[in-house]
Length: 463
Ligand SMILES: C[S@@+](CC[C@H](N)C(=O)[O-])C[C@H]1O[C@@H](n2cnc3c(N)ncnc32)[C@H](O)[C@@H]1O
Image (cartoon, rainbow, N blue to C red; front, side):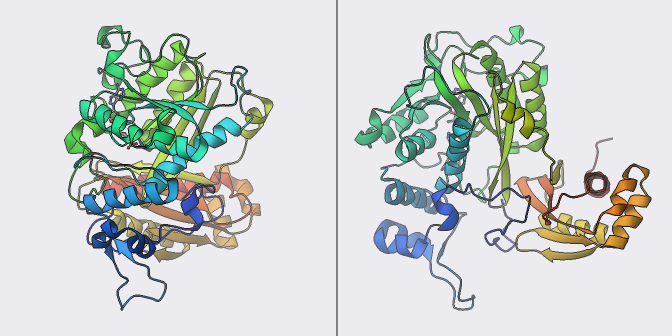
């Protein structure tokens, strides 16, 4: 969510060890939408496309105003039609999906299904079947999954407007209609969740008290290769920070549930225990890293045999994918779990609204300069490249008894990026810029010190 004062970031060049901004099979990875071309083909898009300004560099391209919901909706309509042959529309105010970003989640699920982390389904007839929890008026995941990969879906939702428009969007595409069923989760065989039976799994804070999600909505005898979910992320409309800067819109019914994503996904995890034989993979999008950690441990707690996560970078926002399964893991997964990590991250939450990525980045730079590193900042992408020389690496390692062995290593270089999640919450992420592994002790020690320094400077704890 970039602030109006700051320049819009250019497409990010990722360093070694960083996940790509887009999935490699995402059609927009190599060729992002060409707004000028699309506007020439679709007159309805023209009013929203501005030509490159004469003052900008020759590589500048036509652009759209991302803060205008009408512009982002028209762009999604055109991309779905032009690139996917899908006819689509949503009413004013409904959450507008960005097609390239939503495609990343679909491709990640495709990877999970193709991986040999868990055994192949023995009952599958080769047709992949998914369950999209909270498909929304936009019904984006079933439409993308069906048009890109021929998958069939049940898409569930609970609001009248979502159910009505999801059905309309399916019916507008007769070639996909057979593949997609829109299901009202309120018509479930189980009654509204009774809070009092919330197990140890859900503390009061994490307790979901809404309509059924999976249990009771999935019918007896049904089986799916996966479920997916872009949950109502927020606990309240205030936290959602729904303001004119948010181009994707979204009503309270779409964005908010009591307990937010943490409670919603905890409920999915709980349901998954009862439905462990009905799905190969359970997955969900997660908006906050602190929740990801919590949910990963919940999935382990209920006995998931495989838990996987990924990061989706969407412009200046990072989101995570969480997947778990109860099928017995293969050897490949056990080996992969032992891999070295070349990145580290933490959240800064409860920041005053005027504290943005810019201030944090400046402090990151000062922190590393103070320990003798050299820094190169790129304010347009909110990142700073940090290089610590051989000698300095050795000095730092010697000052930390736990890292003596790092002294034998060469200098290190890594990138620190700052992402705005929601107003008042930033993610700070460090990723290696070198081919060989970072000396993990030193890197994590530096990152913990940075976290502590930034929290001391910016996060005001309530008395
Ligand atoms: C953030 S929106 C996601 C919409 C769409 N999948 C997307 O990615 O743009 C969350 C959706 O979950 C729906 N929802 C909330 N509680 C639900 C439940 N118990 N079962 C199914 N859907 C639910 C909301 O109505 C809303 O449409």
